Length: 316
Image (cartoon, rainbow, N blue to C red; front, side, top):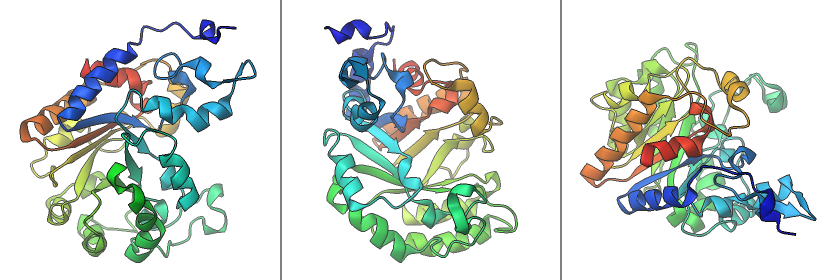
């Protein structure tokens, strides 16, 4: 039986996108998505019949093997999974062995390092609402994360320290945050690139940017529900703090994550074009090429509804 008969018809030109992305990669611009296990991309990035088992589509097989097919189109991927726990050595072995060595990774640092207190959520169990003793603990970060990643250092484009939105009782202002961030960044070994993503708009001040610049750490230009739009961020005089740039196009300002999931799932098509975000990503691409500096750009399904098609619109 020819299972390709079951492939969904699509106007998505995967080969053309691949060629455009390869051209940009040669210029130091790496564009990919935030995470990759989306069945909504079948018929676009993924070929349905590759994941059939005993005549039926296997979700398990898809989730275990689709990264290899992802790497046939995209040069880089952002791994959100590592935010939720310290992955084991066995997990890293499996992940890096599941796709070509040419695929680059941006990895989120576990929240065990970036959460000042654990959110009051059931999944945190008895830790919910408690202070985090490992917050910005450089020794724990080194032993539990960096040391395990060193065998694959050449595939890791950047490590992203994502800090959730801090309430005022944690930090009255950016200066207090920087006072704790500075010594942590000072400790970090220089054999990885690092970027900081904040969710407090009021932190985008000279003291914060100066801290990052002194350590060669990039500010993540992030489109998020409670952050300035990307065009506004890239216009800030001091926002480019390193010799590389990181963009994470996640959400439209004012749209909560949960609403985006409800509105856009299962992420088959663009449903809400975001011209400002697209314009800003174009500007970052142009800046990177002009300066001959790397740029790492990641698009989330929850920005417009379908990350591959958003990327297709940006680069073709």
